[in-house]
Length: 104
Image (cartoon, rainbow, N blue to C red; front, side):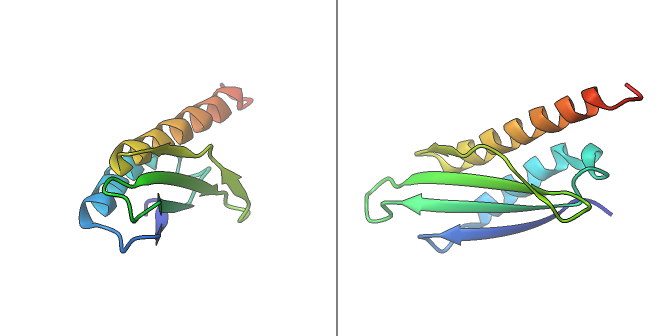
């Protein structure tokens, strides 16, 4: 079935390439579907009036009990890199959880 993802853009209208990057990164978390059936991704353009805005990316994982597990913010001038960073952190956190599971 896969992990569901809701994306919200703040401060700018969004972009197809960012949705594509988020979708590609989400595939990396598919093996954790039992732990995280859904997630919310917020991509915010800080100072959007600048020629090169700064982006803040927030990823919240949602557990089967509908609890939020926020991932540390990732930020930078490149939104795609910030998205990859957020998913890197999520993957590390989920791997740590699986590593602590009693059957491992």
